[in-house]
Image 1 (cartoon, rainbow, N blue to C red):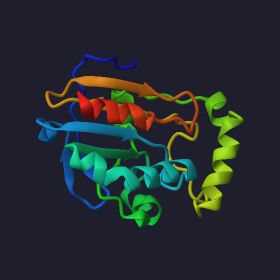
Image 2: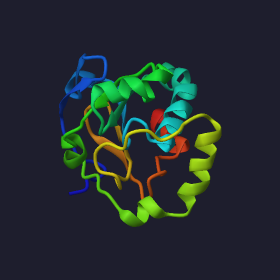
Image 3: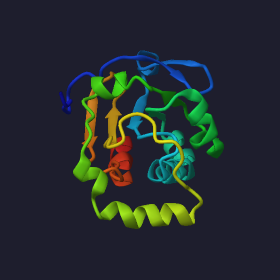
Image 4: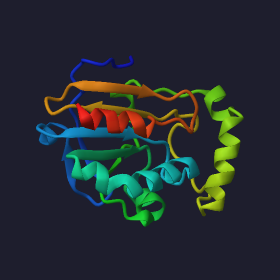
Length: 176
């Protein structure tokens, strides 16, 4: 079931790829961007992580905490997306428990959408080549902006595998 703005974000405890434990409750008092990605070697996901890393300092300076969830085990996260050394936690959810708790789905049409082809080509030029596909192959990403009290202030469910919340919405969230 999809979540809605004004609902309390489902709490969770998860393991980061580096073995540290993360709980959403421990981030109360901070604005949180919880991003759900596909598998760790997904070229589109890695390209998006690169964009987030490039903007991280400005986001973090405005008090935002970032969490990125992947449906891959920690060793795959380390092998692929971890090579970018993101300055925020990468959470491993190979059982896809968090994906279900946040109402994220899958779509064959979203997987096969023509728009993905152009972005895959761009990702390849940046050196992001697909590796092991882990978890639900047709997973559609999603993003959740959570306020200091744990309330969902923006909910973004992608329509295709390359969809993520526009950065302008994240920036607007930080201004509230």
